[in-house]
Length: 202
Image (cartoon, rainbow, N blue to C red):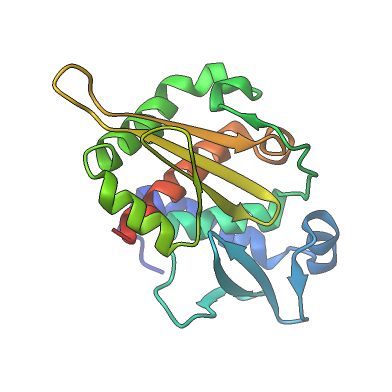
């Protein structure tokens, strides 16, 4: 593949090469993801995908658009390194999880500020998009929704509308199993994926 977008295609190519050597049985034991001998089956934000192995291809089982390359890289990383972790029922901010304090500045810009100014200025469109995705409405914030992110991992996105005195604001909460199931940089990407998916439905 000729690389044109280094920011997205270089990491994707790196993990695609690692994926060829993945032991499917080990991946299934680690993650609990379904494997039929040819493809892995994953559900991300309510959409089902089949990922072929060892030669990577991905297809959307609903026949819709494929996820963008950073999302595909995230799924490859999950198959290579992820694990199933039980959810204890509590919710955590990014800062409250391991290494959260170290990554909080880039996380704030890439996720919280982006969510605030993307959705806090268009609350009605945000609600419509979230409901289209099958998210569960929450009573927190001016608008808030809970999403089944990937397998047992869940996320909540709360948005506050801006006014003449205060800018729009947003908060993302993660099910507590994210603490053990994902590295800090992958939690950042998870937030980015969620925002991109909602924006794509607006």
